[in-house]
Length: 220
Image 1 (cartoon, rainbow, N blue to C red):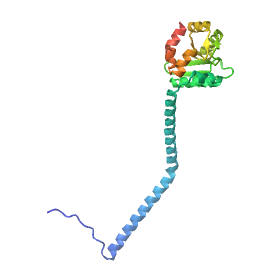
Image 2 (spheres, rainbow, N blue to C red):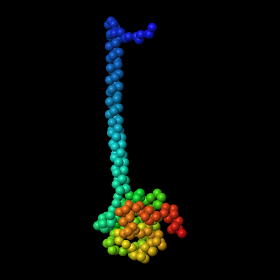
Image 3 (tube, rainbow, N blue to C red):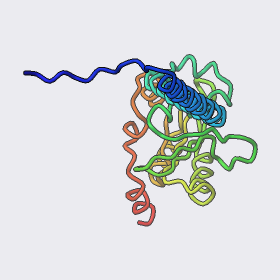
């Protein structure tokens, strides 16, 4: 025969009823104490919870905006016509954005007394790059004196592993030859089109070496 579970019977008599009422009062008092303690604890930790929630939301928003910016930069294309229409400073910022697109941690630094550096970029593999921007007319030409100046300051003043002069115009034959002999890279109008319009990364366009190889080349 299956055993029957015991059933609770209602209290009988005055003593049992009084005892039941006392137990019920004690239970209610204990529940009230627990509820009060929980409420006060919630009031104490609420600012912390609010702060943690705000920080979590802020971090999520930062990551989202960073991803959106990365995707936007990855699609960045700037036409030569747009570059020609810029002023000198806008041209520098455009070159900075192109470096960011290519994976460099870049910033615009051009100002009076900039020691031939308008944009500086950092890369784990290729070290530091310095760009000297020369915004000019389409027919304008950059001469050898600019190459001399960049060569003299890129390493000593800025600690650069790579120096590049960028123009929306062209270079004289002597400037190109001197730059190739002394490791000052140049980006003329044709190369600028491939970099800015076609999306070829600068490190691929110029076949830039790693920082170690660049250092060995300079030492040689």
